[in-house]
Image (cartoon, rainbow, N blue to C red; front, side, top):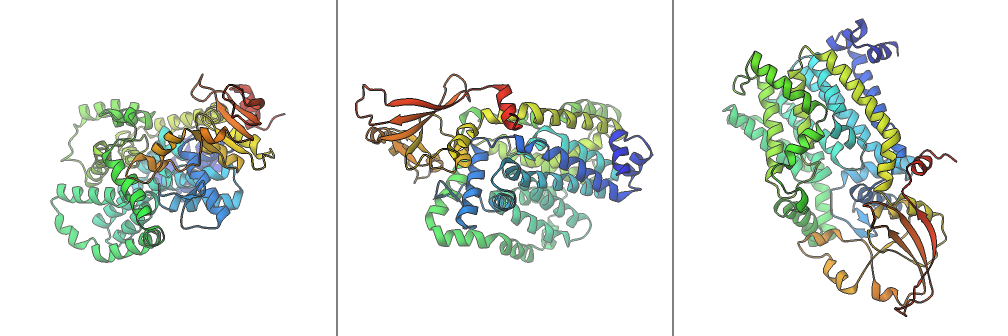
Length: 517
């Protein structure tokens, strides 16, 4: 404990020197694991599960645990083909161990976040030196996007780890020992089980481009292609075969057709379909280091010059990986903030190389950044996540005896309300609109698997509940309003009484998050 405390208080003292220079190897890993576990776990129980991505994953894993079906993901009781199985397994195991709560939902990403920091330290220490490894680990772990995704209920932290291990193992197989190639294939298989074919395409394409640059395509004869692919298929193919056998064209159309082919060719969100989107995401996601890196690049260029051709092999390899990830997703029609996230493995290490000789300054900045993150997660994050969640009405409904009464979202549907309530909640729409939104073709309608209830049918229903989100703000006030009696008379107001109201109130949300009062 003393060496950890010494490193936290002053990286410049004797003990800190030992960690940097590798004279005390074990505390290096223990220190990094302890510090980043605290950073990635801090306040997770206070952050509500948000819509839409987090709640989709959380609800699917919840249904996996409750149904006992650990092979075919479901949401709202329907089979769900958005993502492969591995992340759902992680979440389901966490829920089974710790219950259906925010801490359990965010635990898998925190674990993979810590694992990625440690792996970055190990790999960059191996190909460069331990000071570079230490600096790279601090830079990666305190970059904004990495911190956020190590706390988020999404696949990206796990995907980052598997992709990093896969591409780094290829390089180690190329430079040191070809036995590493087998680890490359195994990690790629787990990446494919986490997010689909991109888990193989990106490492494979980057490896080929690197060998092309090195004019060493003969190495393809030695990458253990046949035995490696056998290992790859043994690890990831069984689940895909099982899903195809059980669900046939429905699985193939939705998983490969909609969520892979359509995502690559037709933009899902026009608001992000801009050429500059990933440039902006780099500066935002790699904050604060993206802004420190630019002056470092200019300084390096002025002192020694910058030349890809003259760079060492490891640097060339990392540049190929980082740029390939950016270019591939630049060419893909659908753009998400997290798609280029795997490139941070390369950029963190390369930035650490740029900061050679400034490692203590990096340590101080990393400590300050981590402190700011921790303050935010204890104050601001609970409020922001609550605003983007249906936790309020969900927890209220969980305690209400609603019987067989219909519960509908009148305007903005929130899956998180179902996660928190454990009850069926319908999306209200006209019969014509339901017909237009119905999934079943190669279109983004495939995501509309939530239960619908028609406005026309609701008029004949005697009792139920409306959940209404105020249109005044994006995630503003929410009300649960009871329906009493028939609404067949269009001129009558069939909403007879307000049951619960959840106004946006910063202090109230914080009190609720901390269970005060």
